[in-house]
Length: 178
Figure 1 (cartoon, helix red, strand yellow):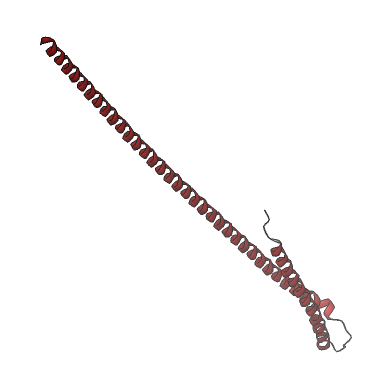
Figure 2 (cartoon, rainbow, N blue to C red; figure 1 turned 60 degrees about the vertical axis):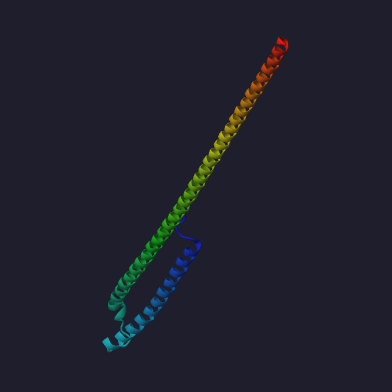
């Protein structure tokens, strides 16, 4: 995984380039100022303006002061760059965590929706099964009532037939007795 994007790299590059240009400008200014100070020192320290004093005595001290200042400046810039990197990494980490939390919430929502759909489907299935069971019971009850009605009808027909046969037998008996 890449820590910085190309745009971030370009911004760092441009920032470092700007700092280097500023340092070069300051060094050039420092060199000019140093040369001027050396000339002033020679004019003030010597009766003979042609005597060389600055290059042997004052230049190393000024160079050391410039070096120390440059070192402090570079350390401060490095610290700022390090702080900026840490800040960007922290922001990146926060964004990543926020993205993960968002994904987790979306997954949880999808799971909940799926669970609700399954629950609705289960309830609908149970209701359909209950409806089918009730219809089946109704059909069985109607079939039983129909079968009972047919049995009663057959029994009545048998009873009627038996009575008719008895009447026929009774009439015949009466005819035979006469």
